[in-house]
Image (tube, rainbow, N blue to C red; front, side):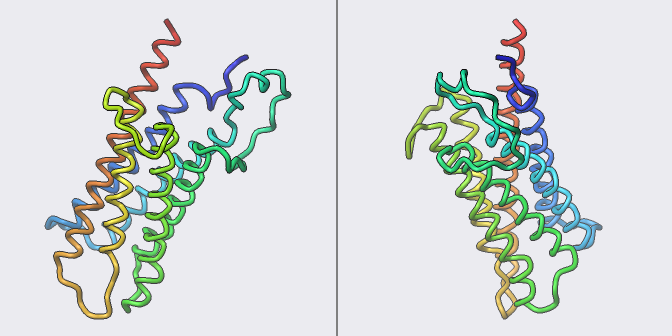
Length: 232
C-alpha cells in the first residue's frame, strides 16, 4: 500500500522543523527579557508571538497526521480508505489525544502572546487576557507531553535511554513542565511583584524552549535516518 504524504519521514522532519523554529523564537524572546537590550517590551512580545505561529503550524500538522493515521490492525488493509480529516476524532488513540491537546495549547499561546503585545494597564486585565490563556496552554501542553510519553513508553513510566524516540518524548515532557512553572510564576499580583519572579518565569520559559528544540532536533535526525534507510 502506497504511503500518503503525511506518513513519510519528510513530513515528520518538516513538522519538527516548525517546532524547532518556534522554540528558537521563544528562547530568543526569553533571553531578551532577561538581559539589557535596545528592544522595547512590545517588540519582545512580538518575538514571542512570532514564535507561537510555527508552534501552531507544527501542532496542526502533527494532529493532522494523527487524525489520519492508519488502523494498525491487519484487517484495516482490506477496509476502504477513510476520507481525509483536518482534526479528526480518535479519543481511543493516545497519539491523537496528545496531538490534539498540543494543537489546542498552541492556539492558547497564540492568544496569550498576541495579547501581551499591547497588555492592559491593570493587573486584573493582564491576568485575564495574558496569564489565563498562558496557563491554559501550559496545562494542555503538559497533558499532551505526558500522553505522548505514555504512548511511547506503553505505560505510565519507562526508562529507555537507548531509544531516540524515548529521549524525544522525555525531553519534550520536561519542556512542558518548564512551561508550566513559567506560566505559574507569570501571574500578575495586585501589588508590584519582585523582579526575580519575572526572571524565574523567563528562565523556565527559555529552558522549556530549549527542551522543545532538542526534542524537535531528535525527531528530525530520526526522520532523516528513516528516510535514508528507506532509500537504501
